[in-house]
Image 1: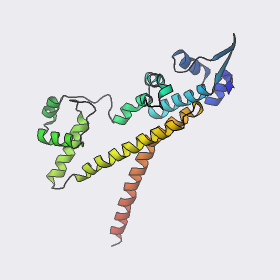
Image 2: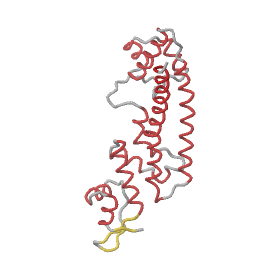
Image 3: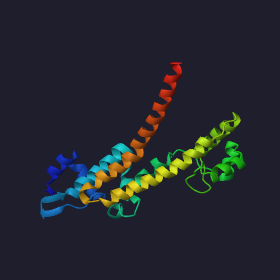
Image 4: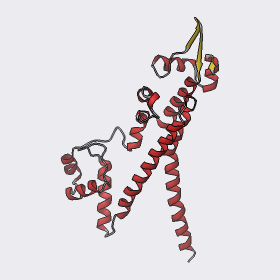
Length: 225
């Protein structure tokens, strides 16, 4: 289906100036030129505009991040994970303000037990994003384990988290492959919205609500005694 600029503005709820800016920056393909002053847009423009708006408003992605992802758009659902580029910082759980340390500086700065550090790395409880790259995130996990040990309680729950995290990540990869199998140009933005909403909203909702319900049930039973 083809659209005039006025129809594209209405359909996407984006101003003409923004759409033209995205075309200029290479986020959208050029319009089909019918006459010198008549241009036609298509379903691809609509889907890309939905994707850009979603990534900006819901994921806080920058134009540069989205542009990088869209450069790999055509093979994004056929093996490439480049479309996840705008979300990698969110997935990592790290902010740009975190200070990074080498292992030796990390041990010195946070007074870390080196033996425990190596054990937690081997158990995949500690998962630094890059080799020899540690932050306060890793220090907080080590401190948590030390508190488990201090009170004489095994931190087996963290080991179980690791096992289940691997299973969940494999399920999420299967989801990506399932979405790949139904990819069409006109459902581009919907497929990515499904992926992002599952990773960042549904997972948190299901896990936290499940924990809440179980703890609430236990508390209720305790109060009834």
